[in-house]
Length: 358
Ligand SMILES: NC(=O)C1=CN([C@@H]2O[C@H](COP(=O)(O)OP(=O)(O)OC[C@H]3O[C@@H](n4cnc5c(N)ncnc54)[C@H](O)[C@@H]3O)[C@@H](O)[C@H]2O)C=CC1
Ligand SMILES: O=C([O-])CC(=O)C(=O)O
Figure: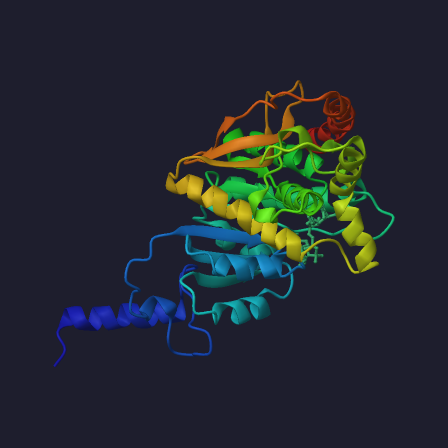
């Protein structure tokens, strides 16, 4: 004999199966077992991370690497295509993070609700002959829509914006958040980590060192001359001939184009970008956890120059960007580069701002 309370519980369970709330997910491959019915995993503290554009060239390896990150407890994969397949695939990896897939605009809000960190590699990549700015017309609208979702569903999340042109998409995101009344400049970061990764690699090659021992600050922005490597501040301390300086600066500034041309129409950097994005996201998560001394370069709201946004070394903490470091002493070559960078950056920033304001 079942008592009344037990029958009520059974009815509630059946009703929940027929009308599952948005946060219930059927266990993959099962018609009768819901994830919420599975025995709870012994406490797995960690952060909730969403990737928007997760089925793309960057999104897929990025999702795989984030699934391997022990700081991640929940990983939401959102795209307008192919997320069921990518999610099924990645969810079989025997690492800690629980993976959930979300497909299409109708599921954007569920993908974003409760997230601590949102990484955005959504949008079209370059083909040979294009500049990053040529992507503006398509990617500006994509970034605006995704950021409207963030403002609504996880306004306190840290946002790592990868979609190009970063020099304009970050100002677009800031304007969207301002409009929604949720803007916190400390939580919005344009990802320029690939410039640092490339700079470390190319400088190490010239110096005959292991790239892991090299640290090159790269400031400014993320396109052509706005990418300004500070070779006078390389660690370990070293010096370069004028010829080496010009070769390295040009190679770092054109690293993206080097990949676009080598891929010959099949897109831009994806694997090195996924690596760089995870390196950067991991730094943001360590900052959120409260680790001391987490410093990386990023394109952020800044007073380091007269421009409203600028990439430089920032300290990451519980609120995102906790401190922005000044550029430090520049040599004459870098001072000239800085002026060129600022001129181009000013236009790109303004273009992003007016896209939302108009
Ligand atoms: N910040 C950086 O250093 C770098 C930035 N990028 C940029 O990253 C972006 C993505 O590059 P890839 O992954 O190679 O391109 P991709 O075309 O391979 O993937 C983009 C993904 O975005 C998805 N997408 C399109 N519209 C969307 C929307 N409204 N909502 C959600 N997802 C949407 C697509 O379905 C696709 O899966 C490009 O804009 C590229 O220029 C690329 C390399 C480096
Ligand atoms: O070059 C591109 O279009 C993609 C990108 O931003 C990079 O690889 O740095």
